[in-house]
Amino acid sequence: MLKSIRISLKDTFIYGLGNIAIKIVGLVLIPLFTNRKYFSIDDFGIIGMLDVSALVLTASMASALPQSLTRWFWDKEYKGNQKGIFFMSFATQLVVSFIFCILLIPLSGTFSELILKKPDWSHVVTLVILASAIQAINNITNTLMRLQSRSVLYTITNLFKLALVLSLTLYFILARKMGLEGIYLAQVIGNASVVLILLGYTIKNSKIFFDKNIFFSMNSYGFPLFLANISAVSLNVIDRYSLNSLAFLKSVALYTLAFKITSVLKLVIVDSMKLALGPMMLKRIGSPDIKRFYTKVLLYSSYVLMFAIIGISLFSFEIIKVIAKSNQYWEAVVIIPFLALSVVFVNMKDVTVYGLHVVKKTRIIGIIVVFSTLLGLGLNFLLIPLWDITGAAIATLLTQFIFFLVCYYYSQKAFFVPYEVRKIFVLVLTGAILSFSCLFLNKLGLFQRLILKSLFLFSFPFILYLFRFYEPIELQSIRGFISKWSKIKNLKSNLSSLKGITDDL
Image 1 (spheres, rainbow, N blue to C red):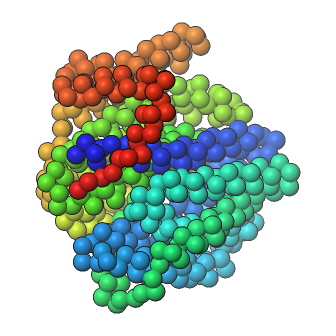
Image 2: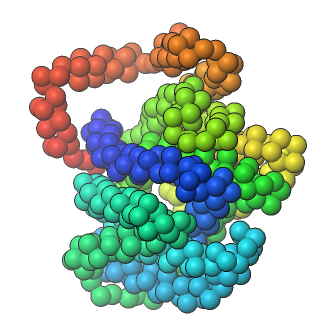
Image 3: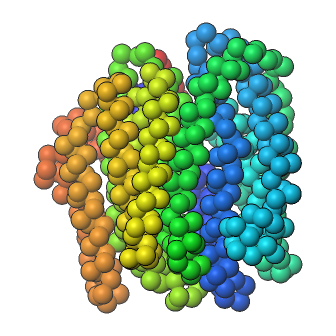
């Protein structure tokens, strides 16, 4: 059990390095994208719409193949044919991506009219389609690296792509004056470069293989997840589509900036833990301590995430003033606590839903996600006319909360796990109160508010202590962790100790 947690932390840290780099690139580009010399506020709104459209396209092209590959890769019946299973998944993705490009690129002008309300962005839409198609192919290889615990290779290749995309984006915008086209041309080149770099790794782990029964079984398993993926992505982007329809591009721009800041939480923490823990949580199916493992994963991940949510929320005003090059964007600060808090429910849903994966009841997941998407659509159409971007943010928070509750209910019915509900409730309530306090503290002077915000942030673990949140063994582990890692002279040996961690089942 402890070894599993330690290897999870190690892989989470390594994946986190790559994800942190992704957000650094995103944050580096925000001052450029919000600079009126290069982009208007409406242009930034268009970037937001194109980015969410790329997410929808990638999810559509992926067709749940990464999830099916993950489930069959560790299936005991096919464990001796993992290269064949990977080849079949990779080849299928190549065909799917090619077909999507053939069908969608001729319609790029139509999509430009529908999404951006002007047909003259069709060439940019074409680049978005190509970048999404290649990214879907990359997702299969990325999944294999996760399954093989090749976290270092995964991080190095993604860091290379990020560096290339950042360099090309800056070159195309600053030197070539290509505007929006330069952003997405850089993404096409970056994604294609990773495919070529990993070609040797892909071939090495492939064996020409096709089995009709396995193929249809994987698709039968994956189809409900495909619907769930589409609905989940729609759930995450419906706020900006709704704002685009019901408000103005300026509203989309403000919401996009707030979302980019809070998405640091999901990408760096939630997604990093998911990359490390996802394969392990499926790999441990049948092990005697699986339920306690799930229990602690939910508690510890929520704890780390909530600390970060409080930090982002409290210092959101200062963050926006630093990275946004126009004061037009400052009013986005009011929605950051809502969007940040919604991420904790995303994480809790991602962990608890594994119960349905264990019993292979993926159809329920699909139904829940479709329901949540429709709920989100309804809340957006109800609240945006009333409160504009604040209405969209509240709709997102409520939708993610209800999404988690429904997933939790059905997962517990299918595969009961004794989650520590009281501790989770105390953690979320405390975090929410501290996060929303920023809306009052922002009115103070700079020095005064920085002091108070810092005190609020670091009071979080101590407030939980007052509510008897920690078990004695956890307090002992925390003291041991602090004692070990606070000794700078032992840093090299402490880091070296991480290399020998293996997951024994």
